[in-house]
Image 1 (cartoon, helix red, strand yellow):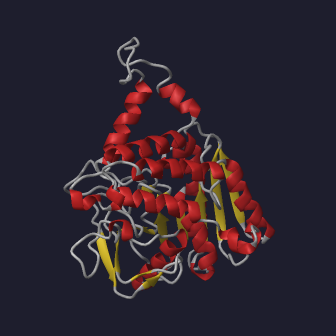
Image 2 (cartoon, one colour):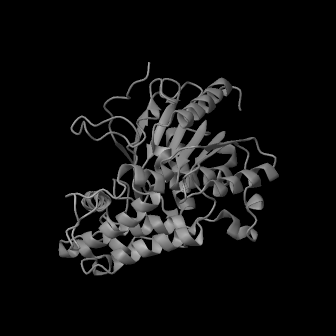
Image 3 (cartoon, one colour):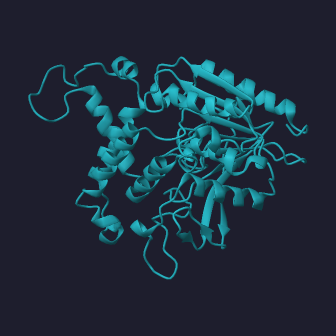
Length: 379
């Protein structure tokens, strides 16, 4: 029977050894915050790492005792009897470095000072996250993951795991993502960043000193992002041209329901998300491009992979269109990898990877059942 993992508790792991970053900088010491669900088996081969997207965190499933309304962002997928069954798998969610949800990031007090890192926190890449996660796995005694799973930015991490640590991952589950951002996607990220950076309350990233938050910039950034996560069909179905008061106000206040929805989402986001984190994570999205060091040849970039792959996309996702997933599939097939590809007919745009679509969840359930069947065989 399907159920929740119930009340969960975040844990913290400290690393004192410096982490060399792709930029040439290093992080002298850092914390990673994480949650686990299920039990690691005696063979230590049933662990699944879940990599999170831009505004998510380590809180993947379940609830907190003091925040029963705070449900994990992928709770519909992970739990007893769910597609990623915690009665069979040991599931781990790790908060990325640079985040504002507990792991070391811009809000963290910089060693040797009494101030947060703020804008001086080093630029982080997808590859840096994966290297930090590999160290984390070492601490847990996990030599090889049964699967690394992620959607969107999390999918980039799952893909990076497959070529950075090919012997440490049996399956890569890569959902609604791309091997690199398109120029259009980079443009959306830049407009969002400029909204934040040009907010008078940003103060060059040192807004903590001033006791303010660049809310207006964060709100505009969130509105831009949110529009790209939804399909035109879903926006039309949910809002259409519906008016809040039934008629035009002939002003620049909120008239349309879609305006009200975007403002609500933006205000909520600006109340909890850190502006410097937003800059860092969107830049990590922009910089991910494994083919760059191989003359633009993605097949060459993925030649080191050894895992089995599930790659999934959604028909109405225009932010990470199915063609981007097919490019990954083609590069893997050129290397004779074992690849399952699904292009799911879903109306919800990019957000579909977070929703409870029967076809999508059926696909994931079947794939993870196949993984279960291979546990202990080295597959």
